[in-house]
Image (tube, rainbow, N blue to C red; front, top):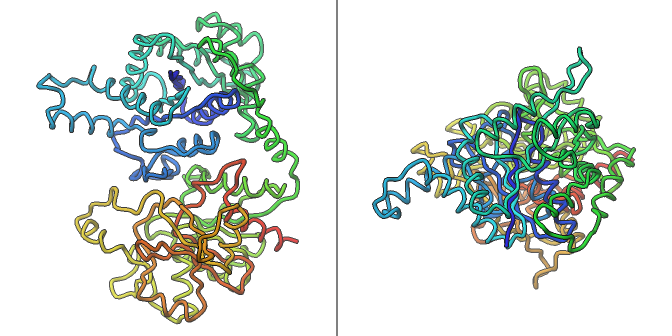
Length: 552
């Protein structure tokens, strides 16, 4: 029988509900329970695929091709599991399902209403996630903050579940306690107000995770306990920590895991005490020697602020790989548009141990990225191209090595260019009709990795068994609609581009490399989606290893 833990936010967003949810799951896992997690986004968007990454953060892709909020990535990384479309809900997805059911006469002629039919659909999907994942615990993060009308129907679903399953449902509130500089005292009033909003929705939180810049003191715990109607022991201190991987360890200082189990009348099945996790956190703290990585992108500038959420999975993958070598990653954000204004600025790339060009869409900044790729190729700087980064590496090679001056991509090139990167045939009709949503190659696709390549070496070290022909067969996640155009492949290979991985079903190039280079690898997929703190992705490990060698 599954238990359900709903996690909602207080009066301020961006305080780490996703990490808190993943951390609760990690703690319950360490006590011997099987855990899954569901993210609910209060958007009319059917999925996260059409959302601006600067505003909303990274679009994470599951193995079955669902385009999700970045918190699904946090759940996968912390819990070491693979989730599916069942684990992600949006307002748009739920409404679309209910409307389709009504059109298909699945409500037997009833008047279909917002309440109860929308909350009932939400409950159905949550229970489906529990069943499909055979979970002991389902953690459900409700996006947004309390008091917003956008997520009121999801809170209503949570209330209805508590009514019908009172012993199987728990509510956790994540609330921020500000410390105004001019006053110097931690204030509990926003948390009190958040609890009142929850009470108005018919929900009483069973636990409050108190986020702040500093640890919670006893007077504040007592105040929250009295005014928010719960035990002091159920107020969990959650101060800012150096690394997100410290969060589960910090929660356990307040005995969070056992408090949750006690409320459900359960006991610890086994207790790993987060041993491996604690070891990882200690390694991250103890690693002093740096490895400097330059990230050339365009999705991190918002006014005068630098936002990293657009590339969160790439950042975490770099950390995982660097920690495996007991190194501290130092990531520098480089705007590709700066290279378009000044070629001289490309010299700044020499100070990095390695350069990554991550995924992206659109014309802006592309020429600057291509110049960065060229500089890394010529100056033997370890280069790792992810999805778009692979496509730009092919374009750069075609232009400057194969002397195809008009080599480009159909995504941002001119009509008479040589499209060495082109759209798949089956997508052309959809794009012509401007149907962009869901027109990409998404989720897991197989790739045959050929012997004698850096990619083969990397994947071999991760313990993947060889096929009969000596190659390796891997599964990686995709999110793109443009591919290397095969009609140019012979010309590219003749000049030295090495194809080290292919999808045989569709005859598509998945990985390209250069032989006489410390590390120059471009992949059509997104390896960052499969990296885990305790199991770094093999290609990121090989890249970081090359960076360390260059630094040495």
